[in-house]
Length: 139
Ligand SMILES: Cc1cc2nc3c(=O)[nH]c(=O)nc-3n(C[C@H](O)[C@H](O)[C@H](O)COP(=O)(O)O)c2cc1C
Image (cartoon, rainbow, N blue to C red; front, side, top):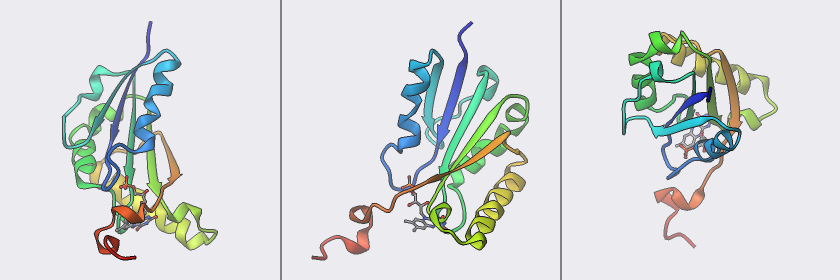
């Protein structure tokens, strides 16, 4: 039987973040994969064998739409294998305080959503300077 995987992602700047694009690799591995942006649809975790949620950290918090979706579906998420990918820059710092702060950010997310992912991974993000309005037009 084919494994079905739901990927729900949130992004602030990327049109399609790399973590979402990687879902093609899951397909190549033989899984059936649906990949949706939080806030644009309301997929039901009950319809999948496993769920991957990816969101990025902006000013010490994840995007509201992903928080709201996870809160709404917390009961179903708790009943299946889940992986939370937290895209951020602090993971690149050597400072243990920065890593503790990341754990706090995830802890706040799990408190708000009432869902504790089975596994959390911190993924190094990127700063796309050209995407930030304050830098546009500067030489
Ligand atoms: C305005 C802004 C605030 C950010 N705040 C944090 C932060 O508090 N902690 C962190 O680790 N990374 C922070 N980052 C880094 C982002 O998580 C990183 O750039 C990520 O790749 C953004 O992904 P996205 O463009 O798909 O949303 C911030 C980036 C921006 C532009």
